[in-house]
Structures are given as C-alpha cells and as structure tokens.
Amino acid sequence: MERRVLLKKLDKEMRHYRLAARAENPTNELLRMVRKVLRVPMKEMAEKMGIVESALFQMEEREGTGSITLRSLSRMAGAMGCKVVYGVVPLNGKTLEELAEERLWREVLGSGVSGVSGVSGVSGVSGASGVGGAKVTADDKAA
Figure 1 (spheres, rainbow, N blue to C red):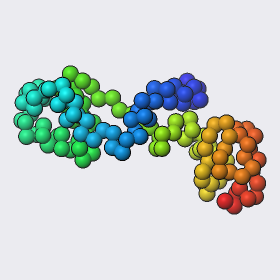
Figure 2: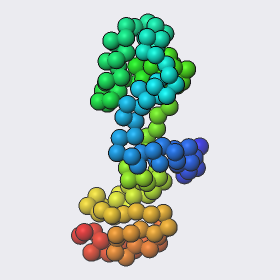
Figure 3: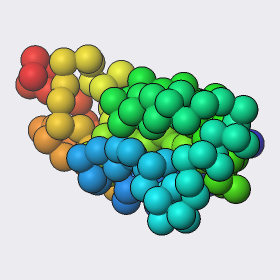
Figure 4: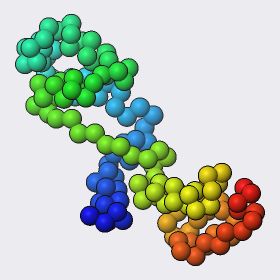
C-alpha cells in the first residue's frame, strides 16, 4: 500500500485514540473502571484467569502505575469478556500525516528547524510556501 494512502488510513482509524489522548492519563486504571461498571467481581475474574485475588489486585495496581504488560492487560480484559485494543498517536493531537510532514521538512531544511507543521503550508519557517513550493533561504538554514 502506498505510504500516503496508509497514513490517511491509519489517521482515520486512530481518530478516536487521538481524541482520547487529549486527557492527561487516558488509560489510568481503565481495566479497574471497566470491571466495576460491568460489575465483575474480583473473585470471578481471578478464577477465570487461574490466579488468586491478591494477584489480580496487584495487576490492577500495575496498570495504574503503567508497569503492567500487554499480556496481563489482555488476560484481564478477556476475563471480563473484552479485549485490549491499543493505539499509538502523535503528541499534541496531531495526525500521523502531519507528523510525517514535519519530519520531512526537518530533513529538507535541516535538523535545527522547529515549528514546522501543516500539509498545505509550513508554519514557522520563513520563505516556505507549501508542499513542493518551499523556498529555502540562508536564514532558514541558520535558524
């Protein structure tokens, strides 16, 4: 699949993850909250997972601190009749396409350039006027 088409497809699929990522810690204790709203007792989950309740409690604690493994997350979700689906999204709510564009401009203009963004135009770069129409000046390279 062509890179540009793949970027657009991933951006579309990850839209909800980007929205969720706006929260400071969007997945903090997510499984514990899901377990509570589904009213799944710890004892039932522990039995389905083949572990003792104290081990399940420790897993929930590790999720809260960000030190749980994907395997443990999946096991916990499965015991509640759910599955884990995760996403990787750029910081600051940007799309993958925007991030890829910024990286391209940094390569073209040099690694010291910051504030490069946008698909239709490049902001923060003197003399740049959009994709394919950028004018690179000596001032740009010195920035």
